[in-house]
Length: 354
Image 1: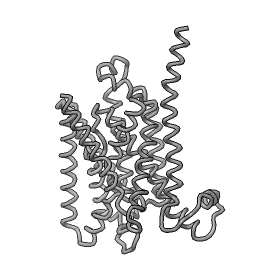
Image 2: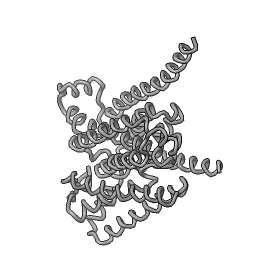
Image 3: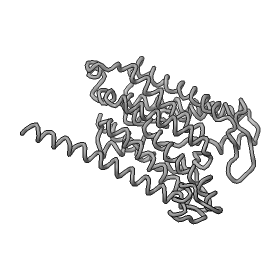
């Protein structure tokens, strides 16, 4: 009788979490339809459905298929990837303030991407209403962004291991690393031509509109593979939550799990930044919100973080496109407005606990 009661309580425990994840998935789908419809040209859900079936016609088909749908999918993929990356970083470093943006990894990836665009000629300048720079070699940009993102990641890991930094000190180290790479970006701008500087600054703004089907495909492949990998490691991450010594006692190779997790999280960050620019705080806000709703069990926290990040970025981009239409605001500015208050709240609460 006791076993049956415990089984029922466990099913109720997991059922609530599954319901939240299902609800987030439905909200993401609903918001996707709203986002595709949002803009100067109104399209109906029926037109969207027919376009997806390959039966669209007229200018609405061009707008949906070539402009709005890639943008919406880029928001879902990038939001999911950044949020899951933040979730894993917070677990691996045992720091609730860890994320690609707060640890300076986004700035490091942006520095590498800017080097590839300006120094190695991976981008070309254009004058149009859609963008100021074209990424004509996305593979070179991604490789450069990833390399420098890994430099920032390895510095964080080495500081944590060799100096035994506290969570607060590690965040401050991340701020210093971000400032260092920002200084490097400024130096590149100083020696660049005026038009190149304008292109670099414009590119750094987070913008989902620059993603084509090619970029969406690359991001989707890497993000999906990364999330699958994280799900395979979910039990190791749960063990790490109980403490490093306890995890080792359970047979977890802590150093390997931590290094591999940070490596994959940095890859997601590098790919997203290299294609879309800096999109701050999604990796901080998404995992923190969902953790307070469904708890710290990574069986549910990882998919929940992915869906929450997708929902937040999609909502931010829709707001950026409609709040002062026809002017489109940088989505990175909107996400920073959302994330900065939460960052300050977590930091203040952390110091009150000491």
